[in-house]
Amino acid sequence: MLKNQKITSRQFWILVILCFVGTTIIIGPGSITAKAKQDAWMAVILSTGLGLLLVSLYNAWSNLFPTMTLIECIEKIFGKWLGKIIGLWFIFFLFSNCATLVWILGNFVTTQIMPETPIQFTNILFVSVVVIATRLGLETFSRAAEILFPWVIGLFIVLTVFAIKDVELENLLPLFECGTRPILGGTLVFSTYSSLTMVALLMIFPACVNDLTASKKSFFSATAISGIMILTVTILNISVLGHDLTSRNEFPVYVLAKKISIGDFLQRIEILIAILWFITIFYKTLLFFYGAALGLAQTLGLENYRPITLPLGMILVVLSLVVYPSTTYANEWTTTTWIPFILTNGLFLPLLLLVVGKLQK
Image (cartoon, rainbow, N blue to C red; front, side, top):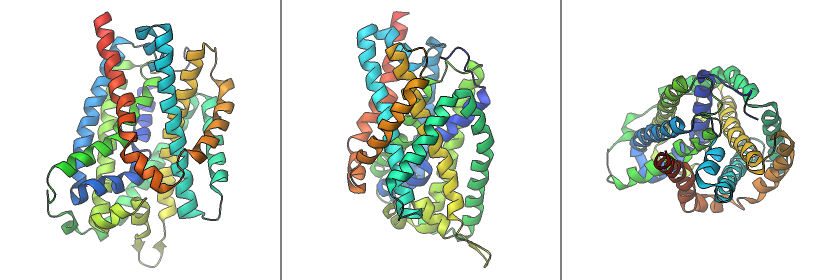
C-alpha cells in the first residue's frame, strides 16, 4: 500500500500547515480567549513552543522507525494481539475526530451561510469529496494541496491587511490581568486543537516521505509558520472585536471578516475568508480519514485500503450527525473529555513508543 506512494518534503510541509491550521483558525481564537481573555496571544506563543517540542518527539520517533506508519510501529513494539488492540484504539481516535470535524463544518454552514440547508446534505457532500480524495491516494491529494496552498496564503493576507485598519491595540491591555493560570489554560486548549492533532501525520511520516532529513526540517518550520498565522489571527480578533466579543462567538474570525469594509465597493467578503477555512478543514479531515482507512487496512492485513473507504465514509456521515447532539454538548465535551483523549493519543502514545523502542534496541 505504501511502496509506491511518496511525497516530497515541500508537499509534507504544506500538509503540516493545513493540518495545524485546520479548525484552529476559525474556532481557536474564541476558545483561547474564553480562557486567557486579552492575554490569549501569549497562550498561542507558548503553545507553539510546546508544538515544536512535540515535533522533536515525532522526529525522534521517526529515526527509530523510518519505514513504518504508527500502526505498524505499534504492532512491532507491542506484539500481534496487544498491538492490534492499541492500534484499533488509535484508529477509533482518528475516525471519531473525523466525525467531529465534519460536524463542525456542517454546523458552520447551516448556522452561518445556508441556514435553510439540512446539515445532512452538507455532511454527505463534504464526506463524498473526502472519500474520493482518499481513494485517489496520498500523492494525488498532496499535489492538489500544492495548487490550493497559494489560495490559502492569499486569502490569509487579504484578511490580515484589510482588518488592520480597525485594530485598537488598547484592547490587548492590561497584560496579565488575570494572572498566569488562565494563560496556561489557554495554552492547553490551543494545543489540543493544533499541534497535538498533528499525530495523524504519523500515518504518512516518515514512511511516505522521500527525504526524511528534509521532511524533519519541514515539520519544524511548518509548525512555526502555522503558529505565527494563528497568532496573527488571534491578535486581530482581540484588537478589533475585543476579548469579550471574541470569546462569545463560536466562529470569531468569520465575524471579524464581516467587519471588513473598504469604501463602498469592498464589503461582505467573509465568504471568501470562509473558503480559506474550507480548504484547511478539508485537508485536516482528509488526513485523519486517510490515516484511519490505511491503519484499519494494515490492522486487518488487507493489501489495499481503497475497498473500505466507501463503507467508512457512509459510517462517517451517520456518526457526524450524532457525535454532538447540540453545540452545548460539544462545548462541554471539548472542555472535559477531549483534553485527556487527545493527550493520550497525541502525546503519551508516541512517547511510549519512543521509550519502549529505544529500550528494545
